[in-house]
Length: 179
Length: 296
Image (cartoon, rainbow over all chains, first blue to last red; front, side):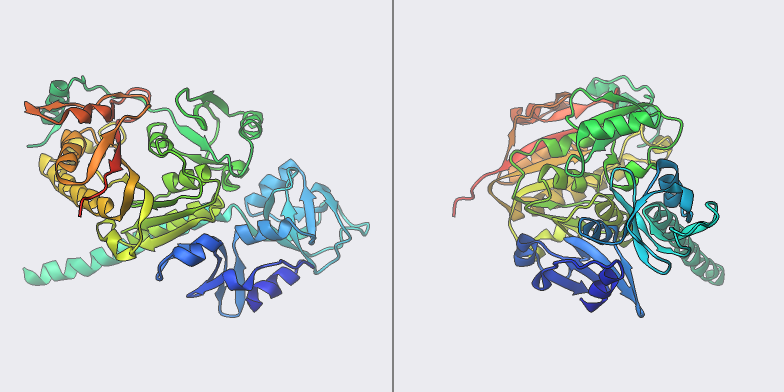
């Protein structure tokens, strides 16, 4: 729970999460609605609202958690359509693509929203947005964006292909030795 | 017994002349995350031309798109899912899903699990089972992307659903099947009638388990994308004779279920099932079963 609260605090925000409904399963945190909490048997792989995972000392948030934070008062910046698309593609944000923000300063973490106020991910302010600097300079470094859903699929299918190849190569010598 | 000629002759005997059909890609709007009109407008502004699927409330065919509809911000935000038109039908056949306890017995890749959550307005409870570990990640990614919060996923065989010690108001059986030659070009060279029989046996085991975990009076939707009667009408005929279930009428596209399969006469209630031969969508079979109270 501390990992989640610390992460949320980075956006100058706080989330009214009901502690009794947050469940840790291996390294992953979930928030379970009342009915799920009461009824589901043990041993689930995934349940309710996935909040994020702890790996070592780092917390990796889910997009659901980012959307939940975005519904409250927090560090946010809204970007234009083109910038939103480039951000989803994994790119950083230039000052010229920022439509609105509220007194964010260098070093702050901010949620990145599109023109529809939908959360696309988050980034870190690396250059002051207010100072007169080159508009073509990177203002926000991309840390996590929803394009990750596509990248995950590619990663996972590569891992599966890799493990299948390993299994195949395990099989081959055995077949030879039988001969 | 296998090969194109063998299967094509079977289809002919069942009343369908085999021909390759070009499938139109379809999407389903996740109404719990956005308004339908808004998503349609946004997609059209991107240059994606949509055509409403007449028999589905939230379904649209992609008429034209210069890029993959699986790579838009709207898709990544979970505003819609890519789901074949016929595959969108089974979940819509349940009545009163909200706040119910639902089992999705063979859930990966999660298209129908998300559709269930959507129709349940993210309330109630969905227990989603998937046997294959490698398919679990695609399933949970799908749930996270579409912001489903009322599901619990288990790495479990549907044939062992009683181990959950739960009873369900609704059970979705989108069972593993032999598939069909419309969605898989190599289908005729890969499949034999023995595969079909093996799948049919497994489906009967899943049906048996599903009947045990369904509340009396509860609904079971059974669906396959197979064209083979062994996995469809013959299985339901077997279920009606051996399990405490009855077939109920449904309102959806498709022909009546076959009541005479290769000379074998089936229970007359089987005609309440729906068989969708490939045309506007892939081939599909769907039916609704109602669990009957067992006399002690």
